Image (cartoon, rainbow, N blue to C red; front, side, top):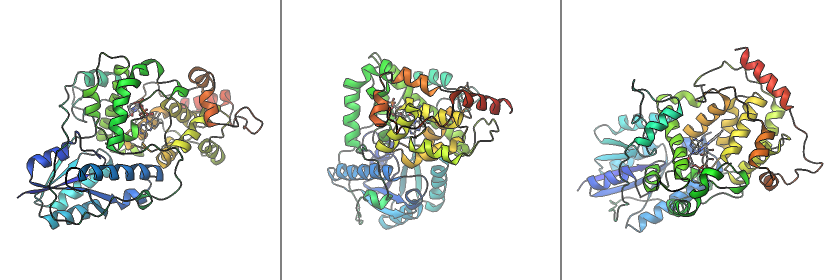
Length: 432
Ligand code: FAD
């Protein structure tokens, strides 16, 4: 009788889960384990919104496992210590886990490998459709420019999606129970959060491919129409696999190519992070910016009270829903880093404090992109928040939805003049 442990991290699904699939094929008994990591739960990496979503995901995973005659085994603490203790308790010969490209994830993997000693640790590429390292430049490095990366990405042959296991046998072990949101990270939550979990993700993806994606090409930037998939938190927590989304797409159908391109951006940033894990707090391509620290302006930005309606609508959507439309993320990001000339790390941390889809690769590298310290080939471009509103929210429907006092005397005056901000930013960057 052989036993394997599957350590779930942010691959919270049964379908197309390479770690789970390999474990089931290689062992008679499986422990599906999740460790509520006290460093992540208590630190600056999570927020109450993500905790609520994660709690949904774990409940959902447990429910699906119960239908297959087993349970999710839950522990709290250091994932390395807890995994080793479960391995010892059941006499497991191997541990399967998804590869992770964040600095924290890579360190966790190294520590786990050392601590397990003779017990085998098997890692599986699970988060990306095209994993880091598969598409490289002729010199074998990661791509730092998206367009050539995408050309190669689009030609990659993906593996077939893996089926969910039918039945699993759990060895004798106390299972514990999935944690509540408050047990993971307590605090103020947004009022309109999505429900997490694989079952919701699969329904959402199904609906998106049958009804939503057709309008994506033309409609994804129209702020009020909400015409994007809203799959980002499900992709982040691995409730649905990117490989499966790409494999199920009918490339001849309308909107699909444009949608796949966005999934390619996600893979692109994962391969940049895998090669440069320190981009989390360091510029990828520095301009030696001497960022300003205007406390009141930063607070007005966080609160959605800058006097620029599109910026304010985006920032309020973030608080209301724990999510923000991509076009608004671009505009609020450009406004903070270029109009206010404030460090992108301030913005990235605020997003991490609220976003339900907050993701090390996507958040950091998109922030660096808008700040011009990352992979944007036009690092000094500034988005004009007034023109962006006229173009992407011409009827002000998105603005009015999120900023009810817009157009009344209580709506604030702009905290900075556009022309002045442009001049200040140009001067700052040209002096470098
Ligand atoms: P769709 O338009 O339906 O796209 C489908 C999927 O493609 C998304 O779910 C996402 O996984 C991926 N995707 C789309 N746009 C991008 C992009 N620009 N970069 C990488 N992947 C993309 N996305 C996150 O998932 N987590 C973050 O923490 C995050 N922070 C961001 C911060 C800034 C400053 C900016 C400008 C963008 C950020 N994004 C982030 C990217 C993007 O805004 C979101 O992925 C998208 O808005 C999610 O909505 P959707 O699922 O409806 O996207």
